[in-house]
Image (cartoon, rainbow over all chains, first blue to last red; front, side):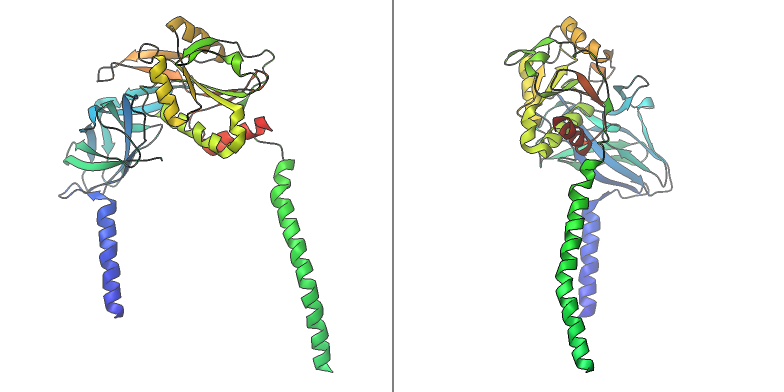
Length: 150
Length: 209
């Protein structure tokens, strides 16, 4: 009886782990988690996606682009504060976000993000939008972004 | 003999216990409720001592002209942003909304106004829909380039559009502070981006006391 319970617990854990992250097969070993975007009004032309990318593999990789059926265009951008205290937003330098082996790249509010330009779908709370991340080595990884409050 | 002594002792402890408990509860309540009020408030934003009232401006909302001076008697939270901004502006507006929710009824004495630094893309109707998504009491205003520039500069708000190779066309760099004008119309507090709802609420609550 005890052994069966343990098996069920292990199976449950495995299912949890499988559903909480999108693991990319193959050599890349990229683990993508916490993919989300903020709800935004219909009149807002743009939105932002945030995601955490962990490289569990032995090879360096980099995020080099993104596409989404929810966006007319998706670009890798970075918000930052300049030395005058002004917020500025620019496409990321070199068009790539490095994800070295064994490291984690965090796209978060006030920093790196996938900018969704000319929204084609509503960013309403609870919506799940498809997003394809393009990696230098691992290729395309498609996942769902949850629209929610942070 | 020993039994009697035990009974006496335990009954006196039994009588004292509720009193000790009551004193403990009173002391804990005092420490929790009163002590924080005796300590001066530590502002999360930067406090300014403005000798003169903040310069007035009149800009256009979807419901007609809006002047800063219309809201004398309330706190005005003045923000310069634009609807095309996907990250910092929605985060800030959402944080102000959450801060107001923490203030309860006192939020009625606070008016959030967002001035668009992108008048070419933000007309009054679009701005109204944008800001009201975050909170139905928020007001969005815009004007001609000159009107917006004249309103922004006295608050130290610098902004500039920069061309963009990608699909955005252009983006606007802007000072993304929340500028809090007190009930007498003086610019009192400047809160930097990323300060967070709890910290904003604490400062507003103190200014409303």
